[in-house]
Length: 399
Image (cartoon, rainbow, N blue to C red):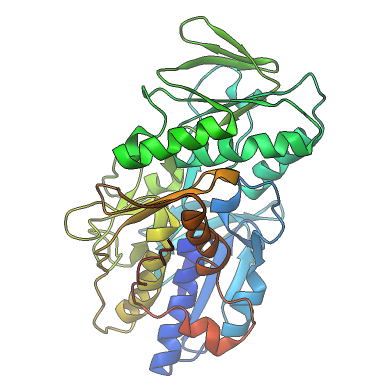
């Protein structure tokens, strides 16, 4: 009887879980007639989500069939709607019809979503870059703006908000707006404060050079078609409001009988198996563990990709009663894009500044355009080899 591994999601963690599982089966000489791998995702694409702030989104998606097909992984296109842990089944909607599929082992990798607090008008009037569709909608909106619609308010001073804001003046000028105004607002007193003192100075220099106005200590009370009202009553008139404030794990994490963290993430062992469960694994933004024994995994492709590779390897080992490999990541970097100005590169959990400007930008482009992509050659061996359960070395430094 054929056993089945089901992977939910085809983002960074999900895709690499599927490839990692296929690699492990290939290494063990186990064919599809004995163990089948199925990926369920709502689109036919693997999206390079971290590039959604860019002006040109061409090339930011990879067709799933071009990666999964050569390695014998079956793809189902549908929206996952429920998980029955006791019955080991997954419910999903495909083409308007409810479907279900049984599993012997499961990898939950549905990732995270932009948090949308109950701010009046936010859902109806704000834009975001959380998905390819949302980013495309924002770019199309900007392309239609008139010369009197030159102000953009970006809310959220984390990495995504900073990257969206520093790219925005160029987008507006390309749309024919000669004198764009971009405001970057956050509840923290200073934009980029979490990046450390060294990087903070670089971020502030870049924002100044690009003409982006930082607004710290700001809380948005409401959003409408013509701007936002702050908690203080101040009005910011803006034809475009971009929401980049906060992330939460996929809400279906609530269907697992375990205690989640404040972001809704599932607790996993270093093997990526969900703590206390018998057949379920989780990886990426929907999972957390202490990656080096001290620091918690973060919602980023930096951790999502190795978590996926190890989850895929270990889900096969668990199914076939073989020893699993613990994941440990002993380094941490942050490379923040700062638009035409360049980028800033920090190392360590204390975010020591090691590179900035054009040198850091070269590193960022290698990461965003090469390092985090799956092989696009269609070569089965190359795809499988890329999913070896190892941790890559830190990104290259220039300058």
